[in-house]
Image 1 (cartoon, rainbow, N blue to C red):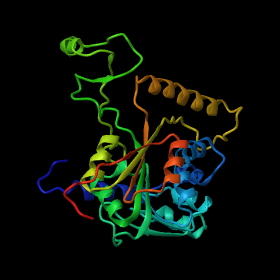
Image 2 (cartoon, helix red, strand yellow):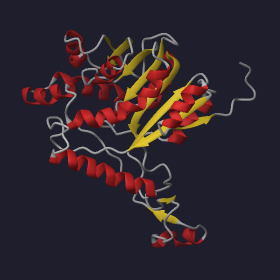
Image 3 (cartoon, one colour):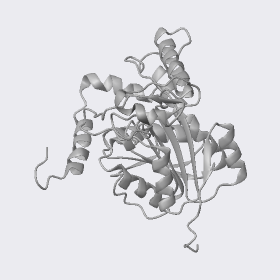
Image 4 (tube, rainbow, N blue to C red):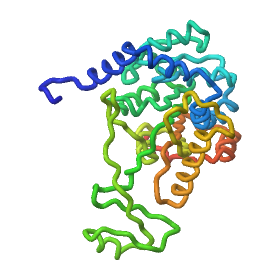
Length: 319
């Protein structure tokens, strides 16, 4: 749809709002499973949430804003269950978060467009966006908004860009440490003669969701540039893999569950491939801080396998 003057981003958000309003009776059972804590699906999300624990432990009295938290405010619920007392849940639609508030699953909620937040600067200590950024039609606007309304920083848990080292769909080379073999296409054999220990990986084609959005992914380099452009001092990253199979929403996370075993086996397989450098990790956990953290927080990040960067400050700006 490329009509002159067509506002795609408004259309995209409208589709997301309409999608929640059109939830069928059949879908309700599946959606209600999001509030369970004993399923394989809950286990999958808990693996992502545990990366928040260093922040929760070091800033127990902090206030949080969750963005795109439309799954009944499950992000907010995790923070609340782990001791955070001040959490505001937001989503583009109130269909599910209103119900979550009425059931006591979350504290408070507000309908917000992530690309144009209604809050003043520095309104919340932290802003969390988990698996929502990739839905936004203009996600970089949303990221700048999150940074604006946060006092201390922003946390993203989103798909990791598998093509970040890729120049074109044909020339998809990334360096790896363990392989001595060269794998190449004929068109770029000359390039490989100039380098050693490189492997060709497949270009991952653009993907879209049924709601109509392109699936945005993030990268360490992309986040680094955002932080440098705003003269922010500190960023940290962690990576992980995940797997989804139909039925995880209703299957209990018992060790004797065949489905649970399949999920864990697939994640293990992905981890081996990622550790070898053959494939990118599927999920990138990003922390962007507006202030330098204390040493004990940095130590906690290291204990939890985060890598961090203390960024070069702009020499022409006096703070």
